[in-house]
Length: 169
Image (cartoon, rainbow, N blue to C red; front, side, top):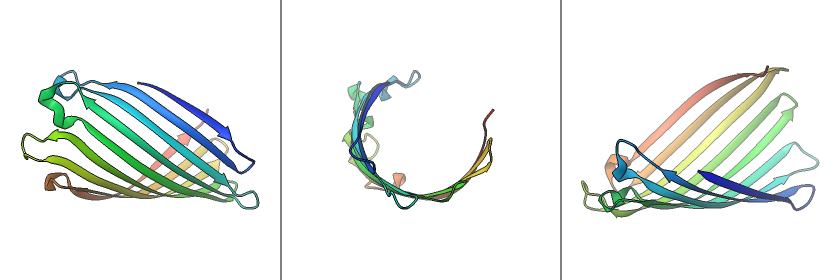
């Protein structure tokens, strides 16, 4: 994959960015799934000068074009939005709440289900980042994810919490 990003500060409190990516998705043992990826998006960020709060809004469009007609139903187009708010009440603690929505439409009729698959994906997350010591960081992330599809096999609801530890040498 090859990607790029352009970013500009609009003011002390606002910045914008545009990003793009082109990639070749290859599956050596299942080449009928091979696709070319094209992705474009933009981000707007806002920081409050008098409070430790940051907000980000982003939107994107992507397309994964199948390379083989036998696997055309693996190709898909999608667009989505993500918003987040970060709050740093203390120097060593930061909290983030984020919400993401994505709509996905596959390119062709699925050979097993005889319909074109369409999905609606949403995710809400809460993240706590703690700088425990100068060289130690702990992250706790909880995510609530839902995918709704016109093919019931692809419907799911998931909640997961995970913890990561980072040591900087």
